[in-house]
Image (cartoon, rainbow, N blue to C red; front, side, top):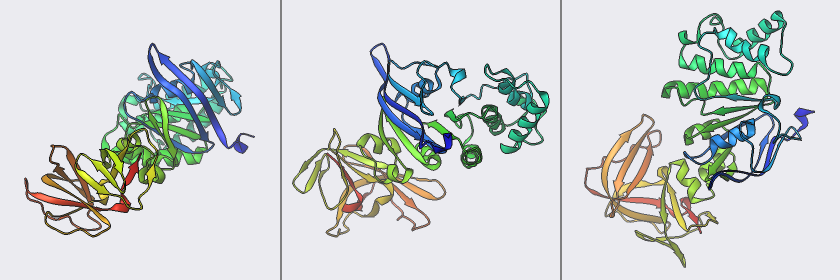
Length: 362
């Protein structure tokens, strides 16, 4: 029956306040069954509070939480069939890998597993699933950070929850290990067939991992869509800002132009979105660097700026320019496409993009 549900979890009008601060302000969301969902938002947006409400560590002030067709606002955490993987892993340092994983099975309040043979078999299967075979008897202090992360995940998955909440699970890992664990987490989730809700403050992590991406802003869901839609069509200036890949301008619309602090940008057939602020966004990798005196075509927009520095990241070069008021404008050049021109520090250049590549908010 559970597999027939289109949504494993639904929240409607969920509000949680701490004094005068609305940590959650009328949250409405639906998590698909058997999917990987990323929850992206800046610090203070309410991400951890939302997880705690879903897990049962906090109760909402208003709204409903429906899990597998049943309301669970007053159901205690240990009766919710929801797993939680903490950022710091919360492993028992005095127990081995296998004993850490077995702990939840043997000590849960409902239906603890008391047969050692069953515990051993399920722990063995889970260790194989998360790629820890051969490490069963090691202490958790004797394994790497990535391996400890897998122990924490295995300890949750061995109890067979219908939903797993992950609170920035890769935050304690180094950059190389985070990249490897992204694909491993997705593969493990697919094998288990349960929904993962993965909270992160990293836009690249959210886009890379989520079948669905939720963007949280000031306690509200600002956008919920697939990664491609979030990246190419952020529905508000706030969402575009969270992605850290758009140059943003605020201003006003006047006829066929956007009027901002750097003059008039002619409008074309670009996508327009409704927002409570009027603004203009152009993605870093949609901008070309040309000599200051270079002409522009009728379908292009030009902005002059002073070159400051380049940053090489391997697959791309990010170039930083200073606008006339000192604000930084960024250009990303993918080396698989073309090498950007060599720019001289403190020299003027034209930053050019197609009108259709910009996004307009009003």
